[in-house]
Amino acid sequence: MTLWGGRFEEGPAELLWRFTVDHSDRRLLADDVRGSQAHTLMLAEVGILSFEESAELLRGLDRVSVEAESGEFVWSDDDEDVHSAVERRLYELVGEVAGKLHTGRSRNDQVCLDLRLYLRRSLDARVGQIEDLVRVLLGKAEDVGDTVVASYTHVQQAQAVPLAHHLLAYAWMLLRDRDRFVAARDRIDVSPLGAGASAGSNLPLDPAAVAATLDFAGVFGNSMDAVASRDSVAEYVFCCAQTMVTLSRLSEEMILWASEEYGWATFGDAFTTGSSAMPQKKNPDIAELARGKTATVIGDLTALLTLQKGLPLTYNRDLQEDKRAVFHADDTLALALAALGGMLDSGRFHPPEPSGMVTALDLAEILVSRGVPFREAHEAVGGLVAGLAAAGRTLAEATAEELGAAHERLLPEDVEALTPAASVAARVTPGGGSMESVRVQLEELRKRLA
Image (cartoon, rainbow, N blue to C red; front, side, top):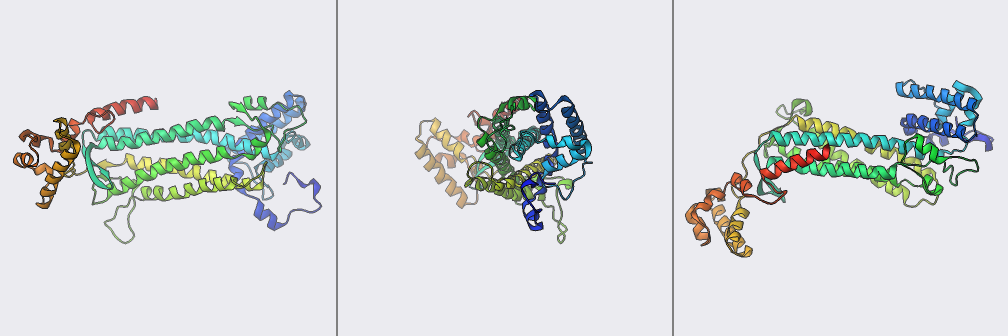
């Protein structure tokens, strides 16, 4: 069924049908029905539909809603899109009055409404999933206690930090990802219904009533903008892409941690895979796929931005391509959050001691605290490190005599500061890599989740 045949003397060619019909919008069925119910109520309230007509349409729409919810709705190959499918089913249920459903409405504002309803509920679901993953990270941060690892810059061991501090860095990143979704909701939560094809209607429609019925926070201010714009879709997919980038970074770390070279973590059998050839392998495939799928979601965002860049006002059929991109990005993020959360939750952490060189900055700052200019302190400790490395030793093995030879203001007791645990214990920067900072972060993160 099409909604536009009156002007045409012959039906659509099979090639036209194959090229123009996209069934991805079928997942908007429940949203389309909900919007149609609100539209029907409004048409009755303003007197365009009689009470009896409205009641018949709502009866039929309620039945379609039940079928959509149960999965019993039967699609036809002749359904051009979700809107025509709903109207076709209404004709089957309530007869000719179904032809009044589209009064004062265009597929242009209808699909915009469906998308906004979809994005709004999907957004709430992603926010919940992100918060669940943050809770996994908080739980792991508590589990590892005072375990100390090396932090890395340039993939080289840098300073000693609590492993919990490292894990909580991703909790902070994910909360920002969550906040981006929450902020996007304000721009998504605007009803476009009533904008019509491009310029509204001569009928006495009440867009605000529809918006109120559907719990939208606002109503469009310009009908052309309402049907032609997809920035809210692109923004949603940007939020998906940025969250996937965070997951990709976490995935890369999990892949490294699971390697024999790092040996930081072992992930559960249920969340890893084997090799078809090498019996010893235990592969972190979830993390690798999350990393790989991030590229495809970035591609979805690029597609949406490119899709919009040359479109004149108002609606153009190019915009039909937005749905596949947003659905793919949303589905990919939803599954990645669930799978990666399960994998991380299954992990056991057993990192090796950091290199004995990770306390070099601590030693330089001891000199700074005694009035030595940082450049001089850096030079002195650098010379000491070079000599020890040449001898196959680390700072953790330096003697009091070697400290004194490196700089006159280094004292024998300073050798006690040259362990990773001592380095963490001495750190005082708020938000830095200390156990007190971890405690404060856990408290603040839990507060933000609440």
